[in-house]
Length: 356
Image (cartoon, rainbow, N blue to C red):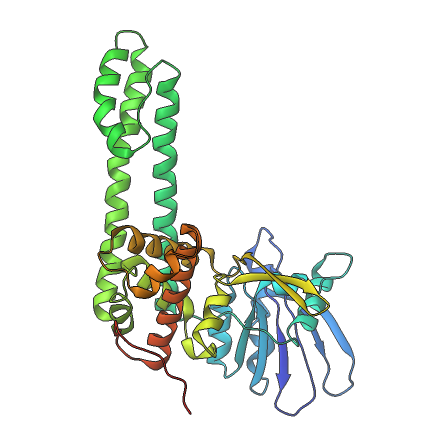
């Protein structure tokens, strides 16, 4: 686990501790690297402390602004430091990496955070335990779906070795595999046939686990007003609504819906010089999981909605399908931000008007 911190006391003089952990056999002895400027002497301090003394390092300090690199365990420590009265700012790891000069070690990484946290940029939201629990369910579901796909492809590949070619879909596999196993039972050893049948039956167990996680997410949606409001947006379902609320945290940290869409990588990447700017494909920065859900939701609207809207039909005439999908996903992201930031229900015909 890696943690980096920067601390600015209310007195005005800068003190920036930056911490980085290193994996060891005894978790209680894991060291953190601290980088800060001593308030009294102005000396730059870069030293290691034990993980067990982590909170004690800040317990007796005046309320401070603390920056940490967003990494494994950072959310937990951010909540603990907030309880002590400090303000925590989580820095994206990619942003910090640019400030690591030459050698990479704990001390250099600590100094990199010390430099990076002073630059302007959007921090990662500090999530509550409930929000992080929802994201944990999403990660487990994502892993189960990935493993299920791997199992299906493995079965198809193994049976192809014996001349049995089946369709790519799950429905095609379920329809064909009983007959395939019956035909191969006369040619192949029983131990292989039994193992293939066990692997096929295991897909149903994975289906049950995925369905159970979705049921729990649905229960959370019933109790959360914001999630229910997002679910009214065309193309935003259970997964997208719950993931958006849990990922964004506090929507007001973004100045606009466009800023939120840019944060999750749904705006064009830019390059150029001399005053000439070239727009490329989407940047694909930020949360890849949430961006993927929005893209799939937008594609679903285009493929299945009876009336996707005049705006979509107009852009369809001028742009390729994938560009239209991304544009609609961008619009969905902006709508999500507007609903969360202004705490308003979704209105299909709403027209945004800038204040005079």
